[in-house]
Amino acid sequence: MFALALIPPSVWIILFIATGVVPSFVFNSFGLIALIITVWAGVFFWRMDTEAPRDEPIRFNRARRKVYVYRFHHDGLRPFSRTAWGVRADVYDWDDLRAEACSIYGPMGTGGLIETVTLAVVKPGTHQVIDRFHFAHEIQQGEMYWAMAQLFMQQGPQALPTFPRPPRDWNNEDVRFNLARRLAPKVQWPADIDLQSRTVP
Image (cartoon, rainbow, N blue to C red; front, side):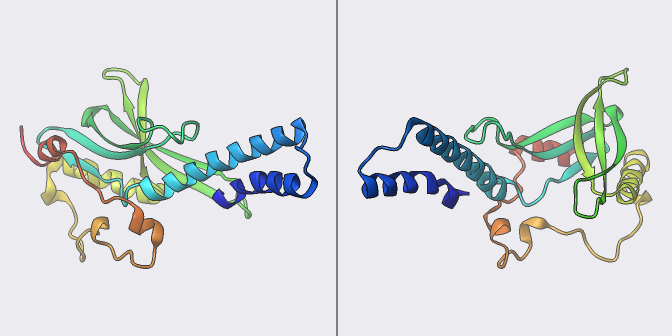
């Protein structure tokens, strides 16, 4: 995208040197619009590749009945903004969460089915959704994760199945051959949220 952004000014300079005449207003307008769009898109894609964290973990604290969500926020309309982009740690009450499954046919070459499971945050005592966040990519996977979360929050860690391998730590993944993953910042919870999410009241 950044290479494409160089085309309009390059063409303008070449035409000016070759003919000695300043290009017309229409030509300049189209060139300026093309330059703005390509720079805009280039900054957006660059930030998406280099600022998105390596993982977006969710922590469940049974003692506090809280859920801690590490989320990356971005805004395509404001790719240069510092406040609209970045990681935020949100805290929700467990009793206000509802799992939602969604399946749609996406605009892919094969018309593939896209399945996602999100967790909806409802206003206490109502069914009004005030926020949503991603939970799983497939409905079957989401059902399994949601069942484990419910087991943990209701009965404790002893109710969970035993797993043959420890969970992956995306911060310690080998990213030598993936430039975007190498540039992606590691997960770093804010100190107060990190302490609160790991302790009892």
